[in-house]
Image (tube, rainbow, N blue to C red):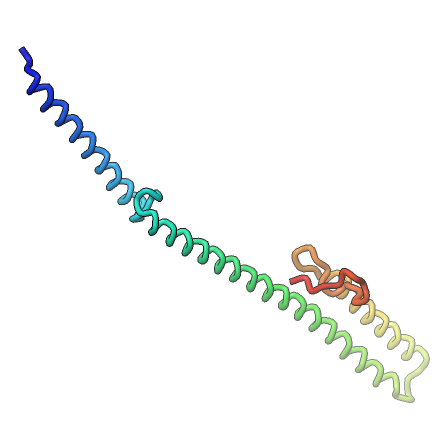
Length: 150
């Protein structure tokens, strides 16, 4: 016949087994996640500090992405301005060439046609240079919404 004493030992053993299983579960969770703190209950102060650092790190990552976007914008504009500069240099060369008194009317018309072509290229570049769906060169500086896209 079972005694009261044997049942209490059995209950105590069962309770200790439950505690051991819970501790083992926490240990396995920490090992599998690689983190000392998995829940705020593990270490409330440590969790607050870790959350603060995590927020700072995320902010720094976003700042780095923003800086890279700014660099990409500057490179896009630099490329467009470089092309416009080449067109302006060619217009200058053609203007000097047109000053030659030995040019015929046909020569001058050809020179003017190329100048017009170069001017058209400058207009095309200024109206179609885009970054992140923004027209970066085709803005009227007198308009109230004129602002740097970055």
